[in-house]
Length: 129
Length: 271
Image (cartoon, rainbow over all chains, first blue to last red; front, side):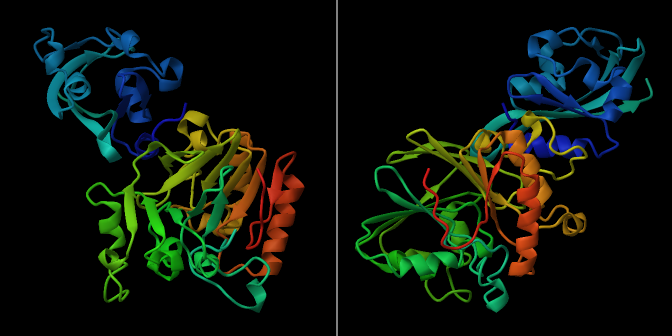
């Protein structure tokens, strides 16, 4: 099954940028993240992806800056996926390499022609914790 | 095929065999319905012989000039006794009719869209619709600006039309996985794929992102999608007949089981 063109072009763009980028389809499946994101997430995409939505839960532990658990509604990628609204937040998460990192996360819902909801694009920006 | 040239009409003695008219393809369904794919300069010639037509459907892939410049010269469009339906891509903010009106209005053209009798415009988002016995699947494909490819299915026969298409854009390993290849679902196992083949490998190197394919890309795409036969299309206006003969010779020599049709006016294919 082919991805929508908008997502194909997004993936091509993401693969050329040095900004960490993460893409989910409309069902919440993780369909791609780029090499800069691999460094933050601690694992190469080709080693783990694509990942079904139900398998994503708990794969990367995400907390607020104080280490407290975040309600789903406050996680930008989940807000963009479930409510189709843009979101931004600073969070901490543990990469697959075991490292905890603080990152700015911005997630936007991707809407194509004909108001088709196609998925979510998120960018990460590592900050001092 | 009424017009197979790309970018700009290129008439002359050196392009006589592959033709100088731009994109226009006529399709007749199993039930006799006539529709046209794109309305480049090639559609004008067919319109001269349109007596007896009661309904015509024109499916536009996109609104670049070489795909619409024949539209106002297509006689059925000006005939109040012919029901004309024009289908094509929207932008994110404008309808097909609004977008076409930028060309069909002064100073670019003396007749306005709203002055055309009996014409109905249909916005085509990605999806499926039916035209008589033909099931039409439209999907966005990789080309600058909103551009559709079409898959026509009728009585078990499948025809894919992707005249302006650059599936290799930014790919380092084309053809790659089907899931990440523009146009894959439209062309998959088609009986006939009519597809962009504008460039040589050398030309493509300096025209990445212009929205077109090389012969090598066309062959790779045809193999990936498993089509039975490919037809070349959208020939570069700088390529004369001898140049195109050479490019087609290469294609046929490397086709390895995929049928090759040299796209040129007058070609008729029965599916």
